Image (cartoon, rainbow over all chains, first blue to last red; front, side, top):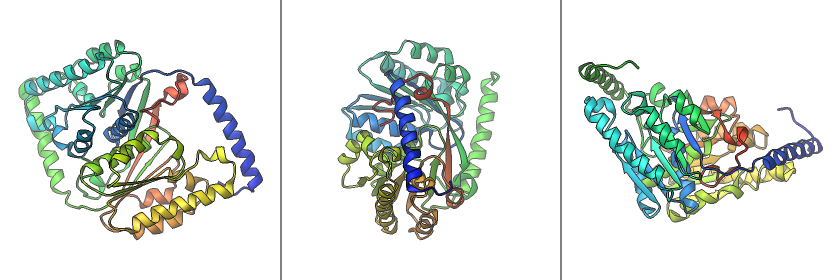
Length: 202
Length: 202
């Protein structure tokens, strides 16, 4: 941006503020959101965790079900444990799907995890439900997307549901309120031979 | 994807597993990363918070400086307070820049916040430093990007530094290890007149 005088700056900021206030005045609806984090970049699960942290801070009750990375969730687990009265954490996934190599078993695990999510969504005492990496399960067709759409359509009005994972199916995107695509601009794991590190990946 | 037999599935998964293991074997480097979350979509700050949560879980010491949204950080603050021995949280920003309309004051606030970040980065007892919305400050030229690059170049080897905010300047992207762009696919705040809600935006 080219430098401006202080007076020009103030005028510009006044304009932005007025536009912002005007826009904000039209935003009156409060509702539980269906949120999808997808894309091949990093940050899908991390951003969902960030929302869980905010929800904890607001005294909400949160259910978290991890579909495929149970074994790696050491970092978040330690924090959730400290808020066990608010966060129900179910790391259901047993390693990545290519480690099990047993479709029938993967489908059974996905089914069990999904039943937990469904129960949490249907129970209005949960303010937020995170189905982490559910998209992977849908992508492998371990679970029909129709069942997920059905549960979302019937959810209590104020419940937020967050679904993460690359390759979100289009019907889920269509049904969602808020969809963010995390796109990789630079990734050290791929480009610099940096390994997955505590605090970042798990 | 078209349905496969169980045998085909197992063979495919074995292949993916082998490729994954081979790739993982080349990833041997551990180092502190410079991480940038940018783009116009949601999740930049949330994903950084998620990394802070993981770092907390691993017993790390973390410094968090918020450049422009101090007043909104009620959710995360409550959680950080519970881990006050590990997280040093400095909400320095006083509202958005269009609310202050005073460039000289904004520059002074940005400067004070940056001095905190610089101090944390230089002190190797911090494992992770989050400079939240620093990109906004750089965009408005309240702080020269060269100063930031200098501090990053001199950082202790194992310290992770996370910088968030839209419009990350190119020199910062060039200097970073991991850059993710959060792209908005669907945004209820814009499209459905849904207002900012606790647990999601703050």
